[in-house]
Amino acid sequence: EADIYQTPRYLVIGTGKKITLECSQTMGHDKMYWYQQDPGMELHLIHYSYGVNSTEKGDLSSESTVSRIRTEHFPLTLESARPSHTSQYLCASTPGQGIDTQYFGPGTRLTVL
Amino acid sequence: AQTVTQSQPEMSVQEAETVTLSCTYDTSESDYYLFWYKQPPSRQMILVIRQEAYKQQNATENRFSVNFQKAAKSFSLKISDSQLGDAAMYFCAYRRRWGGTALIFGKGTTLSVSS
Picture (cartoon, rainbow over the protein chains, first blue to last red):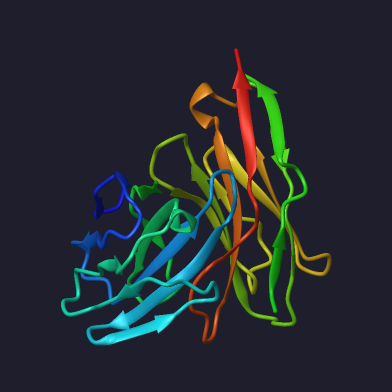
């Protein structure tokens, strides 16, 4: 398995709370991604980054925000969580060269009550 | 826009048997990559096999092989000698070779393996 980590693995919080999902990788990869996955469904891209200080929104609209201050770190923040944010969030990274296979983290399963 | 379709929500196979998972995709690009990912229950998603569209030879990785039919836009995964550990959700994914950002996924196929 790849060296990409996500914390927390599970999170249950109340509506209106601010949360940050952490993602880090030790492979020196330039490109990083956040996907949202509802149970039993496909993954949808919500954010990506091609390097430090570079962030873009993905195909699926999301109220979350991301930052990329360090190469190895790509946190996702929800300023005010709502039940509609309940989902699994997967982080991935790629070296940015060649076939560019994506390596995934274990995911954070978020439940907003 | 590119799309990926997996028409089999669920499949089952017995240990030691062979199973084939289907995937079709739609794209106007001629150069791209295709992937099969495996997501075991509550575990990390991992790459099973990948195919470069400009290569005609089908990719193989031990017990896993693909049948890539570019003209038909079909990319099926064959699992030979199935094992209990193969039980998982399998996702087919597509990415453009040039200027591609992230992967486009199908809805997945849940594979169960019985002894």
